[in-house]
Image 1 (cartoon, one colour):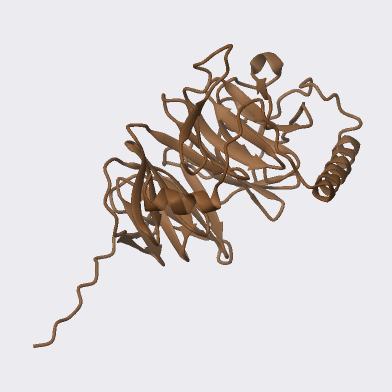
Image 2: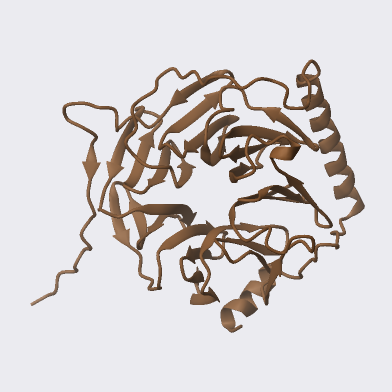
Amino acid sequence: MGIMAAVAALFIAGCSGDNESSNKPFARQVIEDTAEAIGKQMVDAAFAEKDDTLSVPAQEIVLEEVPEVDFNEVNDIVVFDSFLYAAYDEGLVIYDFTEKKSTLIDNGERFNALAFYDGKLYAGGERLYTVSGRDLIPADIEFEGEVTALYSDSFRLLIGTGNGLISKSPFGKEQLMDAVVVNDLQFDHDGLWIATEGSGLYRWDGDRFQRRYLLRDTTIFDNVYDLDFNRDHLYVAAKSGFFVFDGGKWEQWTEAEGLPSTEVHAINADDWMVKVGTEKGMIAYFDKNLYPVKKLDTVEANVIRLLDEKLVVGTRQGEVLMKSGDFVTALIEQTEPTEEGPEVFSLAEEETPETEE
């Protein structure tokens, strides 16, 4: 697959099938088993007095503030230092946690994805940009199609587009996949998972791509929206439900198993309680059980992030909410009706070096 694939193989080796399980050193396995047991005890204690089915009735969301939001759905969120960046169809919104103020960078394009790579924040939509303060600088890389997903490690920036998957690294640019719409990307221990729109779920081992599916339904992963990986499990948000893969077998959750809706748009597995955003509200998953997420159980989450034990949720209605304990607040307020309107910044001109006469 060329220089890039050869180098990538040094970082990603091997490919596991649906019926394979990973081998771990004994000490590591003991540590992980102990941690999981402690985590399970904590969760069991927290929910000891609750039915672990979904018998708890839905609750109306109560916010400290509910600004009127004119934007469409939140497409992506990243948090860095004291700033939150949210990608919208109408532009890039920056929320300053210190000043509790948000601003809009508007260049007339939609933004779908955000990622940090090589010390820079990248924002992708109709084109790929780096974000410098309140300026958008066009990235020096050419490709076909709109940017639909961004993902980075210490070595490369992976750019999912409406026409495939591209890798940008110190070795240059390489087209890894063609003719697919990439929705999300996620590394596991030794491979890369690729979620697509209409083309299925793939895994790349650094050398080849393998489509993954279930024999009972080969189309079940045709439309996958979000991926996450933690504690040796892959979590999949798809139009056909919420899936958990332990390296050997798949577990599926739909409305029949207690989800608010079978269509799942967002997942976050940073905590022991995996947060799942469905079309009709959020739910939490742990140890093959589902639990309600208080005050967010009716929210249509499109993006879910964890920030210092606080949940940050981008909704399909354009809000960015933060849940801390029992309190839910709205962070993005620049669309609240005012006489002056939101603070707006435009595309920065590329600098042209001066020439000596």
